[in-house]
Image (tube, rainbow over all chains, first blue to last red; front, side):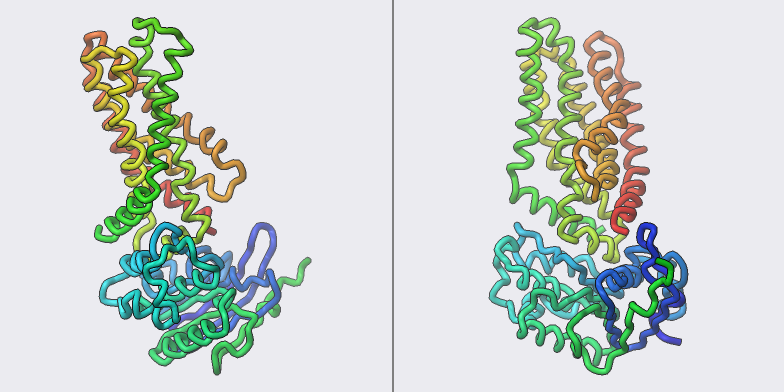
Length: 211
Length: 221
């Protein structure tokens, strides 16, 4: 039995069927890359996986149990990076990261904010206010956030947006370490070969045929 | 519980660093009350008679002013989404945010209200009743208002919509808040008004966080 799988998922936004009949399954150390044109439902699928929205039909299961049974449980095993980077302008980078790791169970904290920032090459920004960060730096702070607390499932929605090559390399390294520790990662991206030996899911194949 | 404290601390921290917001609410409250003597004329009897009502209405308006931002910033920068994805019940997060809202708007209003009441010539015996009524009533305003603040997320002209949603729900608090002061001035007991206001408060604490969390989940979908 796969650790995390989705079965016959249907997603409807407004009146439009975004995708239907979608299946996926992930095991420890697996990576899944979501491909597809704009509007094909990559973000919608990630939001379904995170539990932010409910599938119109079908099941998402963790270890055989539907994730909707215990959302708090599901929340503690996932990290989600969405389109926007929640970095508060009037808090320092360190305070921003610290806040999010405070909300997680203490025994799962694996890195201090300083170490996490170091891994993304921005340890010099630790005491800087969020207000003066560039888009790329904000994204790196957001990524540093997920390095502080252990969670088996990473859901990354276009994580490389506004990152430079060096930061992209840091992210790829972090994902490799995460996978070698048995973590799973789902990424929507247009950048090819961001992770090695990954499953690919082209959402274009699950579009509804009706116009 | 610990996580509740973390959220309160972070929000309070941010509110204090942007201290002007709280100050502006208080200033609005004071100016709104001060306008009435100018409009009505310096007739002590009339002013003393309408003082509780004016102070309460101005308090409703001021507490509503800051409601729009209760979730809006977190909604815009993606924090709200992420808060909903933490292993903390969204209801707890809501209570923490409402508590901070009360600390930064309700509490300052309660502190300023007696000064304004004296200025309006409210009889001395009504002062304490006004303070107690505000202590019971303003948390209700924050709690009820939070539902409205959650419902308007993502809507255009949210502020106007918010007042349409929330002000009618404030009416019961207004009625009993004002009548608790009026009763004591007219030498009646106001115990029943206080009991009803306490009832409102308990009911809002019990119900509003759930309604508000449900509205937030809806807006995040």
